Image 1 (tube, rainbow, N blue to C red):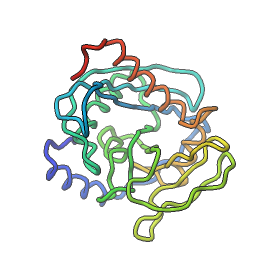
Image 2: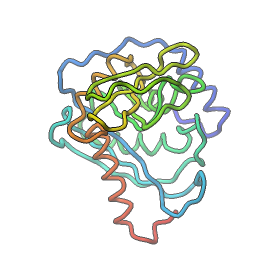
Image 3: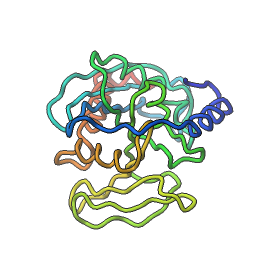
Length: 230
């Protein structure tokens, strides 16, 4: 599921984008949500490089409630960062962390795009397909899509369009805070993805499982000490 070259990944993304899958519907208002995040060694300039050390964390929670379990793995970046080709750099690391969880999540939260992508198959969608789990992307900004910010109230949304089609949605998760971008991924549509992100958000701007995964990955990097520079 994880190509090793840009040309292989482009072909895989086109294939994934064309696959039709039924839309997953949560059976509970508080599904088991796994947030995952990867960070890399400090001190790398520009887009980083292939082979630099990365720390990937996965956190499993029931909605935004207490922690169920977590896992961290260490590995090497598969490639430098390139927009639209993030799966080369991060995909295998994130999959490895998620597979360390003893309990399978209902849905994944990924710091990556889905249909807002040059080939409509960003890492959030790709990772869900690799694990055969419904997935949702959450990012700070859109990749290609455009739209206006939502209203200032918590829960307000607005469309993000690419080629006249809504491919992502801005969501104000905290009143007055900058909105997040919600991306439907594997087996999710815009409404389901937005519902999952709302249910997984507590007081912080970022959904709780994703926020905790980010903290855990960064803590693991810090614990490795100043020598862990890739």
